[in-house]
Image (cartoon, rainbow, N blue to C red; front, side, top):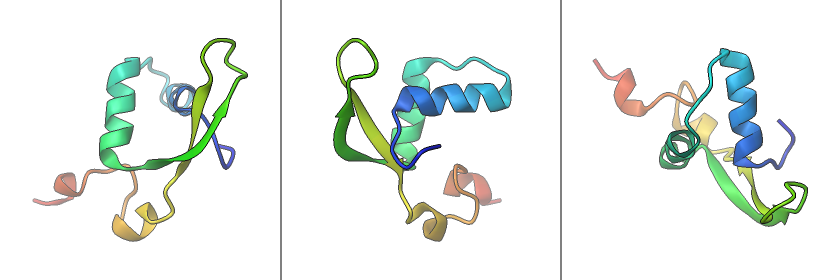
Length: 77
């Protein structure tokens, strides 16, 4: 991913890697509740419609979690 990207670009990358289509709202909710990204305060007008907010990965995620993208509760047994 580039340093700043839209949530749609992130979803398309995840779908390409997993080979599965994802529900847009559920994907966005998961990414936001996991705190994986933060807004840059910028937007892109390349989408053709309403400008899309740009986000970036939070660098602190690598410090906070041993396996980024995995819920801390999922690691407990």
